[in-house]
Image: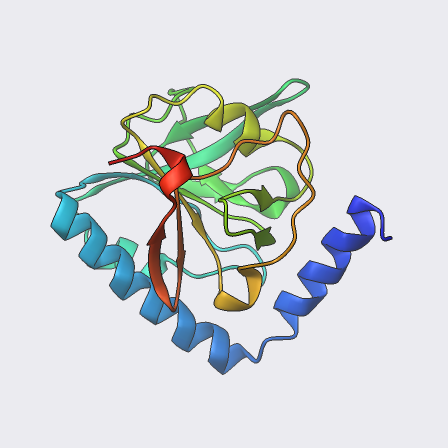
Length: 187
């Protein structure tokens, strides 16, 4: 059995190996699904992430809707893991990620939170990058915030090791569409 670090490295290499054109096409499709979700549910305050490496690229839907309020994470503390949230403008932060220059919310004031990851299982558990930022946030979010794991279909339906501090998301979004997870309890 691989260690979690080896499993993460394997999953990242697997995502990196997807052809660029495949990732771009899938990202555009995911953006279309996201736009429909936001319009149907009247979401206009969204917690998102700027793509890092071979992650899903949400920039097309973000730039297409400047009238929606997009919040992005900034690393506020590594011990304990804590994110702060703010809007654009973004600047390079820790680990080379684009983060808001001013982040003043420890709980993002959003209706929808988009959560990145390396892998997602069918129950909404995710394997992230191993620092615990999103698990700490998910543990504190209000129930009315819809939490959605975002990734390529190649990252979905995978076995994910679960630990007591891991928090599942309520839905999964890939190029195949949005799947609500009944156990998530969101209506």
